[in-house]
Length: 223
Image 1 (cartoon, helix red, strand yellow):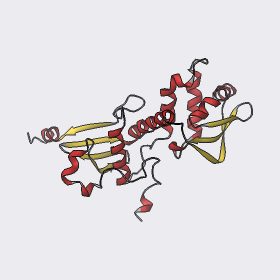
Image 2: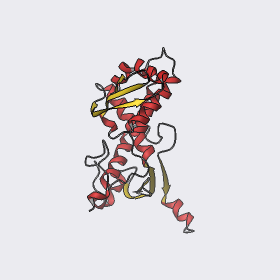
Image 3: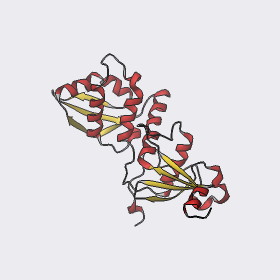
Image 4: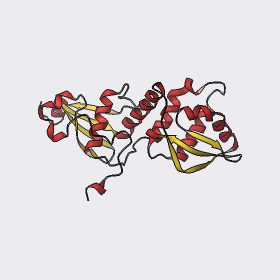
């Protein structure tokens, strides 16, 4: 029954975390700046215990940043692995939006997204970046089309790589409302500790806040 309580593992977070399980940590908790996951609340926030306080992580914002950095790393180390669609998905767009996407098809393929024209006002998606996992493909394609409408047509996608990666990461990230198990939460914390810029999501919002034990004690009049 416990196994049924959780969704399938998150892409990139289904391996065993580098940290021991919370019950095994004890005094070793000091080794982990973001602490050890103790709970998930409202299926949106991960609460972790640190040596001298707690950390509250916005799971969507944090995973979005991690996915964005994975995409960038993959590009720098040989390319983004693709995952073929069992059934290619057709996404209806207006003709101008479809044309903008098709014009960038070769560049998108380098990012792991393989599309083709499908009539005058649609594209068919044949492959997606493997690290995105289960993705709202229609939403991703529509958002990319909107992004491209604001780009200079003569500008290479590599010059707006941050924006494109951010859009992809947003659709490949764990959403609020997604229940996580202990291994997934701790794997996320460990990856955040090892990932540049993990304190902010792609849109500049904080991915976590930290409360020191002294501040919590003040709230309860203990100091």
